[in-house]
Image (cartoon, rainbow, N blue to C red; front, side, top):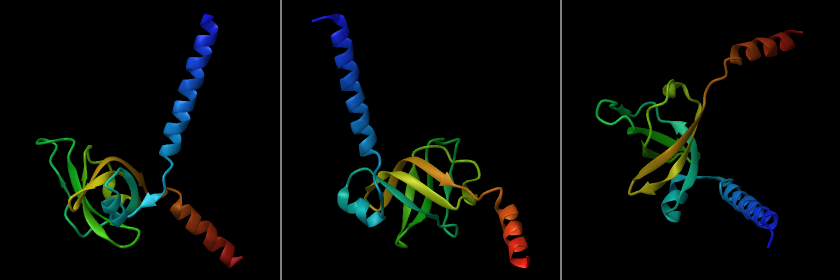
Amino acid sequence: MKKIYVIVLVMIVAGIALLINAAGDTSTYSTFEDAARSGGKVKIAGQLAKDKEMHYDPQKDPNYFTFYLTDTEGNERKVVLLREKPQDFEMSEQIVLTGKMKGDEFVATEMLMKCPSKYKDEEIYINAEKENS
């Protein structure tokens, strides 16, 4: 077999593997209840429970941050994020976590935050101008 055929075959196999891996990551958002039932890795979207305690001690462990999250069904659970506390965390509008349930806690390895738009005031002004016209 020629070298070029081997290289093309390896590239095709690598491409298929990447597509399968990407397809597995496009899951829908789950709830804490779904995560407890599945036992596997899931994505949960929710809002920070601002009235509950948050704990982060970078001197002790910079990759351990705990807080409470309310999922889309209104269930509230303690979350252990195995990363540092993000800057402006308290200002987030929505949080998406990737991880799995361990007992009553959700252990997250990845987090995405939706923060308030810096253009929100401008948007309100434009909408008010449209209403007055």
